[in-house]
Image (tube, rainbow, N blue to C red; front, side, top):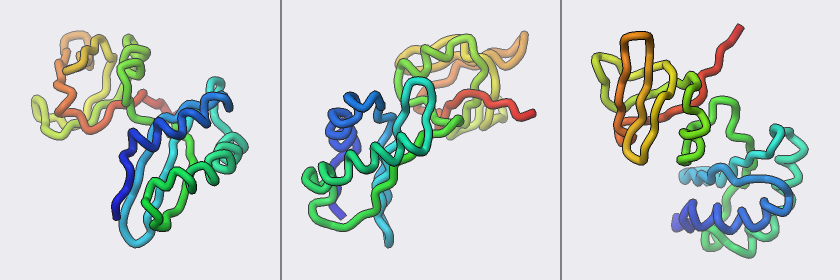
Length: 154
């Protein structure tokens, strides 16, 4: 199925989101037997189901006119990215410097494909992660599957 790019869809939806006080975090299109467009949104102060529902209603008709799938049917979902949302932007990384994060890797480093530690540095090509008092990892972004905030369960 031919589909407009996620970036193009996100840009279109941002024009609707901003006046509502919502930010489009990510757009994901899954093809297959039941194609689905999922729009992940955030709001200052936290998300709730009512906000997702209102945004869904606000974008339903405009999306039909924008026609992201060139006339093919799909299911529209609106969701929060969740507490374990992956870091996507430079601001996501920079705003978490000094905080504990989880990092999942494509290729192991020193025998590890999953690391937890304090994010101590970021540039457009790599992060620096301090896992304990003596161990620091410099990790290329191209080797990272996912970085997200560390969540401690009690």
